[in-house]
Image 1: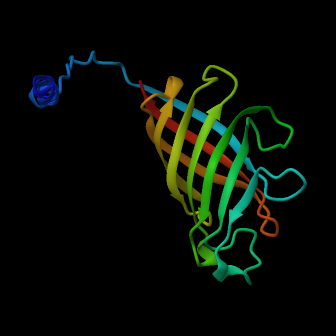
Image 2: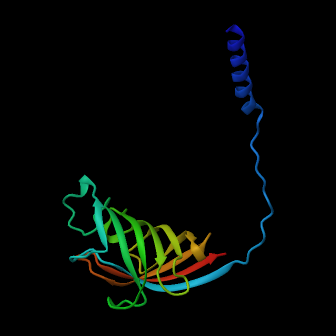
Length: 188
Protein backbone atom coordinates (compact mmCIF):
# COMPACT_ATOMS: atom_id res chain seq x y z
CA UNK A 1 0.00 0.00 0.00
CA UNK A 2 2.80 2.36 0.93
CA UNK A 3 4.49 1.73 -2.44
CA UNK A 4 1.28 2.67 -4.26
CA UNK A 5 1.04 5.96 -2.35
CA UNK A 6 4.66 6.79 -3.11
CA UNK A 7 4.15 5.87 -6.76
CA UNK A 8 1.00 8.05 -7.01
CA UNK A 9 2.79 11.01 -5.39
CA UNK A 10 5.71 10.59 -7.81
CA UNK A 11 3.33 10.57 -10.79
CA UNK A 12 1.50 13.68 -9.51
CA UNK A 13 4.78 15.54 -9.00
CA UNK A 14 5.97 14.62 -12.49
CA UNK A 15 2.70 15.69 -14.09
CA UNK A 16 2.66 18.96 -12.13
CA UNK A 17 6.28 19.70 -13.00
CA UNK A 18 5.80 19.16 -16.75
CA UNK A 19 3.93 22.43 -17.39
CA UNK A 20 6.58 24.33 -15.44
CA UNK A 21 9.12 23.16 -18.01
CA UNK A 22 6.90 24.13 -20.98
CA UNK A 23 7.00 27.42 -22.80
CA UNK A 24 4.72 29.51 -24.99
CA UNK A 25 5.31 29.04 -28.68
CA UNK A 26 4.22 31.31 -31.48
CA UNK A 27 5.41 31.71 -35.01
CA UNK A 28 5.31 35.06 -36.75
CA UNK A 29 5.58 35.21 -40.49
CA UNK A 30 6.38 38.27 -42.52
CA UNK A 31 3.25 39.99 -43.74
CA UNK A 32 2.75 40.29 -47.44
CA UNK A 33 2.39 44.00 -48.22
CA UNK A 34 -1.19 44.74 -49.20
CA UNK A 35 -2.31 47.54 -51.46
CA UNK A 36 -4.16 50.24 -49.54
CA UNK A 37 -7.46 51.30 -51.10
CA UNK A 38 -9.36 54.55 -50.76
CA UNK A 39 -13.15 54.43 -50.94
CA UNK A 40 -15.39 57.49 -50.92
CA UNK A 41 -19.03 57.06 -49.93
CA UNK A 42 -21.93 59.52 -50.00
CA UNK A 43 -25.31 58.93 -48.36
CA UNK A 44 -27.93 60.51 -46.11
CA UNK A 45 -28.61 59.28 -42.59
CA UNK A 46 -32.27 59.62 -41.54
CA UNK A 47 -32.42 59.95 -37.72
CA UNK A 48 -36.10 59.91 -36.70
CA UNK A 49 -37.02 60.40 -33.02
CA UNK A 50 -40.74 61.08 -33.55
CA UNK A 51 -43.80 59.18 -34.75
CA UNK A 52 -45.00 55.61 -34.42
CA UNK A 53 -41.80 54.01 -35.75
CA UNK A 54 -38.78 56.05 -34.60
CA UNK A 55 -35.29 54.98 -35.68
CA UNK A 56 -33.69 56.36 -32.50
CA UNK A 57 -35.08 55.90 -29.00
CA UNK A 58 -33.95 57.17 -25.62
CA UNK A 59 -32.86 54.21 -23.47
CA UNK A 60 -31.49 56.18 -20.48
CA UNK A 61 -31.85 59.70 -19.12
CA UNK A 62 -30.02 61.52 -16.33
CA UNK A 63 -32.16 62.40 -13.31
CA UNK A 64 -30.78 65.94 -13.32
CA UNK A 65 -32.44 66.76 -16.66
CA UNK A 66 -36.09 66.05 -15.79
CA UNK A 67 -37.12 69.67 -16.47
CA UNK A 68 -35.32 69.79 -19.83
CA UNK A 69 -37.90 69.83 -22.65
CA UNK A 70 -35.32 69.16 -25.37
CA UNK A 71 -35.83 65.94 -27.40
CA UNK A 72 -32.18 65.14 -26.58
CA UNK A 73 -31.45 66.37 -23.01
CA UNK A 74 -27.92 66.29 -21.58
CA UNK A 75 -26.89 62.81 -20.41
CA UNK A 76 -29.45 60.95 -22.49
CA UNK A 77 -28.43 57.72 -24.21
CA UNK A 78 -30.09 56.76 -27.50
CA UNK A 79 -30.12 53.41 -29.30
CA UNK A 80 -30.26 53.91 -33.07
CA UNK A 81 -31.12 51.91 -36.16
CA UNK A 82 -31.14 54.72 -38.72
CA UNK A 83 -31.69 54.23 -42.43
CA UNK A 84 -28.88 55.16 -44.82
CA UNK A 85 -30.44 56.46 -48.03
CA UNK A 86 -29.14 57.67 -51.39
CA UNK A 87 -30.99 60.98 -50.98
CA UNK A 88 -32.56 63.24 -48.36
CA UNK A 89 -36.09 62.22 -49.38
CA UNK A 90 -37.81 59.75 -47.04
CA UNK A 91 -38.73 57.54 -50.00
CA UNK A 92 -35.22 57.37 -51.54
CA UNK A 93 -33.51 53.98 -51.80
CA UNK A 94 -32.15 52.47 -48.58
CA UNK A 95 -28.53 51.31 -48.96
CA UNK A 96 -27.81 50.39 -45.34
CA UNK A 97 -28.34 51.02 -41.66
CA UNK A 98 -26.48 52.87 -38.92
CA UNK A 99 -26.79 50.94 -35.68
CA UNK A 100 -25.35 51.78 -32.29
CA UNK A 101 -25.53 54.36 -29.53
CA UNK A 102 -25.14 58.07 -29.05
CA UNK A 103 -25.01 60.15 -25.89
CA UNK A 104 -26.12 63.76 -25.57
CA UNK A 105 -22.88 65.16 -24.15
CA UNK A 106 -23.31 68.95 -24.11
CA UNK A 107 -24.90 70.95 -21.32
CA UNK A 108 -24.98 74.05 -23.55
CA UNK A 109 -28.02 73.87 -25.86
CA UNK A 110 -26.42 76.49 -28.15
CA UNK A 111 -23.41 74.22 -28.73
CA UNK A 112 -25.21 70.88 -28.86
CA UNK A 113 -22.94 67.84 -29.23
CA UNK A 114 -23.25 64.08 -29.04
CA UNK A 115 -20.69 61.31 -28.69
CA UNK A 116 -21.48 58.43 -31.01
CA UNK A 117 -20.49 54.81 -31.45
CA UNK A 118 -22.23 53.64 -34.58
CA UNK A 119 -21.62 50.84 -37.09
CA UNK A 120 -22.58 51.80 -40.66
CA UNK A 121 -23.58 48.58 -42.44
CA UNK A 122 -24.16 48.60 -46.19
CA UNK A 123 -26.91 46.29 -47.44
CA UNK A 124 -26.73 46.82 -51.20
CA UNK A 125 -24.29 47.56 -53.98
CA UNK A 126 -20.60 46.79 -54.32
CA UNK A 127 -19.99 46.91 -50.55
CA UNK A 128 -23.02 44.85 -49.46
CA UNK A 129 -22.20 43.02 -46.22
CA UNK A 130 -19.39 45.40 -45.27
CA UNK A 131 -19.43 48.06 -42.60
CA UNK A 132 -17.32 50.74 -40.96
CA UNK A 133 -17.44 52.06 -37.41
CA UNK A 134 -17.44 55.61 -36.11
CA UNK A 135 -16.50 56.50 -32.55
CA UNK A 136 -16.31 60.25 -32.25
CA UNK A 137 -17.69 63.50 -30.86
CA UNK A 138 -20.25 65.10 -33.17
CA UNK A 139 -20.66 68.86 -32.58
CA UNK A 140 -24.17 68.92 -34.08
CA UNK A 141 -24.52 72.74 -33.85
CA UNK A 142 -21.67 73.31 -36.31
CA UNK A 143 -22.64 73.56 -40.00
CA UNK A 144 -19.88 71.15 -41.08
CA UNK A 145 -18.19 68.63 -38.82
CA UNK A 146 -15.79 65.71 -39.04
CA UNK A 147 -15.99 62.31 -37.35
CA UNK A 148 -13.33 59.62 -36.95
CA UNK A 149 -13.71 56.23 -38.65
CA UNK A 150 -12.02 53.73 -36.33
CA UNK A 151 -12.52 50.34 -37.99
CA UNK A 152 -14.45 48.17 -40.37
CA UNK A 153 -15.27 44.66 -41.52
CA UNK A 154 -15.81 42.87 -44.81
CA UNK A 155 -14.34 44.89 -47.67
CA UNK A 156 -13.57 47.66 -45.14
CA UNK A 157 -11.41 45.45 -42.90
CA UNK A 158 -8.90 47.56 -40.93
CA UNK A 159 -10.56 50.75 -42.18
CA UNK A 160 -9.63 54.15 -40.89
CA UNK A 161 -10.64 57.54 -42.15
CA UNK A 162 -13.12 60.31 -41.60
CA UNK A 163 -16.67 61.39 -42.33
CA UNK A 164 -17.63 64.98 -43.12
CA UNK A 165 -21.21 65.75 -42.06
CA UNK A 166 -23.65 68.51 -42.92
CA UNK A 167 -27.18 68.79 -41.63
CA UNK A 168 -29.64 68.63 -44.53
CA UNK A 169 -32.73 68.88 -42.30
CA UNK A 170 -33.35 69.36 -38.58
CA UNK A 171 -36.59 69.73 -36.63
CA UNK A 172 -35.75 71.38 -33.29
CA UNK A 173 -39.12 70.46 -31.79
CA UNK A 174 -39.02 66.68 -32.19
CA UNK A 175 -35.30 66.08 -32.91
CA UNK A 176 -35.75 64.50 -36.36
CA UNK A 177 -32.72 65.04 -38.58
CA UNK A 178 -31.35 64.14 -42.00
CA UNK A 179 -27.56 64.25 -42.20
CA UNK A 180 -25.48 64.39 -45.38
CA UNK A 181 -22.43 62.07 -45.01
CA UNK A 182 -19.29 62.19 -47.17
CA UNK A 183 -16.99 59.39 -45.99
CA UNK A 184 -13.36 58.73 -46.94
CA UNK A 185 -12.15 55.24 -46.00
CA UNK A 186 -8.60 53.92 -46.17
CA UNK A 187 -8.62 50.11 -46.08
CA UNK A 188 -7.04 46.95 -47.52
